[in-house]
Image 1 (cartoon, rainbow, N blue to C red):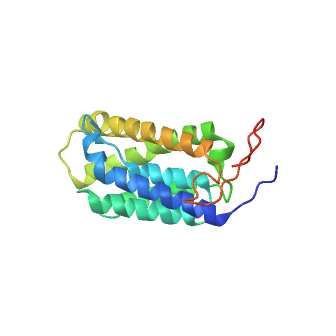
Image 2 (spheres, rainbow, N blue to C red):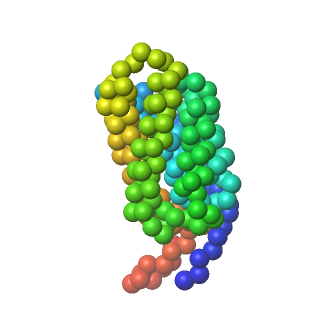
Image 3 (cartoon, rainbow, N blue to C red):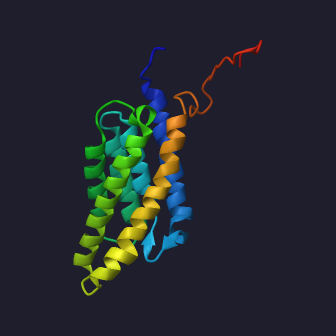
Length: 185
């Protein structure tokens, strides 16, 4: 089997991922809460794009996702943007689509990076808004937000791992032959 690196299909997958994550961020994120920790679908979008590879594309997706999160929340503008770009830089190991090759490793790396990004984010917010007890920051914001982010990252990674490059093509010709069938689709 020959693996073809089709940049237009990868771009379509990233655009669809961004649209879905941004819509979920606006529609569902304010309502998915544990303690004081909210889910961050923009972080999920940036990490999934970083796992898909593509040179500088994951960095741009991380920048746009972070900026979208910062502009739709009441936090300082640029903080999540910086953290997501740095995390995408660390997670992006080149032009290889890691989700298709090793989804379990992506989930492991994503869990570690989610914990790190959320911890730095909460600590920076603690500097901006002093007087909040550290217990509240760690156990009511950081751990629940990290858990929610990782739980939302899992289905995205698993779905992207199961999809071949021709499934998310927005009308592209996906021809598959099924054994035992007379006709090809």
